[in-house]
Image 1: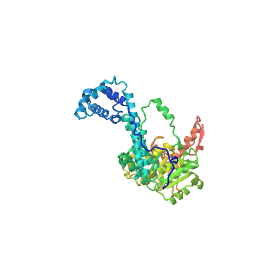
Image 2 (image 1 turned 30 degrees about the vertical axis):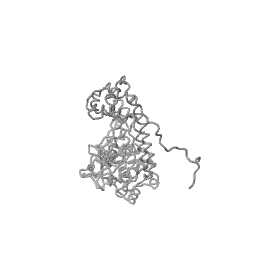
Image 3 (image 1 turned 90 degrees about the vertical axis):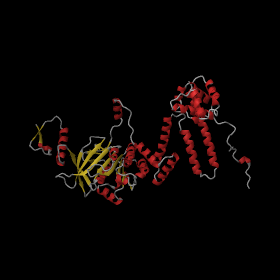
Image 4 (image 1 turned 30 degrees about the horizontal axis):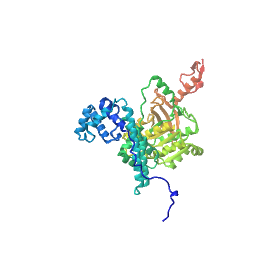
Length: 514
């Protein structure tokens, strides 16, 4: 046996201080109850904040419960009614009988200060709760049968619940606090825990802690992703808001910045190759038809679930991606699913891409418990919508069309994105197997319904922009000629021209000054 000198041990007492009463303010408790008995209308000022357990004296708790019960029934909380209620419930004598109630009234002048007195009582209650949790933590620490990690988690959680709760919340304020605290914990799990099985475990543990199901926690998180409406705005406020949210573009007039785009097409149309081509335009700072990139060296993030690494590399090389482009400005993940949302958030933070291609929504949701026809199937898109704004990036989500040519699945998919592009074959009599029509079916950045004629080359996998489809029915060549004429006239304003031939052609030299 080794003896340790006293001077080398911690001079620390491990015994709780049992010689002092817990914090309390009996005088304030008596004045509150006396005020309620003296002026029943005063009870409404504290009824949604002050609870029976806030009182230190047990008799005071019983009297307050009697007042609360009468108040909920619409009955007055005067001396007569409170005395009768206590008598009916066999606790009148327990609290000291009618003399106790009479003493409370006699010692009270008015209920004028009932609000500040309630704050004092609740402050003492908070201190008692801290002492109670401190003693509980001591007992847990002494219990060698308890795992230390569990002791830490339990103690931290219980202390945090006390310190984070507003001092004197109303019922609504308390519910709001509980909601915000729970949502913060759920959001943290969904956005930071990368491993799906561990995330499920943490949700299960959180659900047990709050006596809630994982399904409820999932729905709570889903509801939090939906956008909130603004306050009622005046015209001046709308103008100010519009001025601070000027639309920015990655490709001017075609690809908005910080948004979500759904590119839907049937199988074999070339939607993935179109996405590759648009991304290449952003990297090289060139143009796609009349649409000019607003910058160069844009960073592209591919989340590929439909193509193998070999197929993807062949496609990028065929499209003219250089090794330096791929090495510096492109990052790729294969096999990603919405269950790995924290991995996406990590990539957005570290790589900071300008453009993210999700190929496809179906593979992203391959582990989803929801069917494509259910609203919850669109949850990953709602998450991406928030991430697009937060990280100033644009998501292009590839999806499939239904038999009618619209977006397949629940309407929530279409509603969740800012843009819907439909890529289809040109089934007109003049169309070839390689003609495509790109329709801006939905847009919050420009007018919807615009259609652009493209041609797909299966040899180099590139799309050629032929022009905009007009309501007058111009074909690709005619539309190009029309665009050229409009451009010529815009550069030669206030000059009158006359055609030399009756038939208008695209040869601008056929026009001469008058």
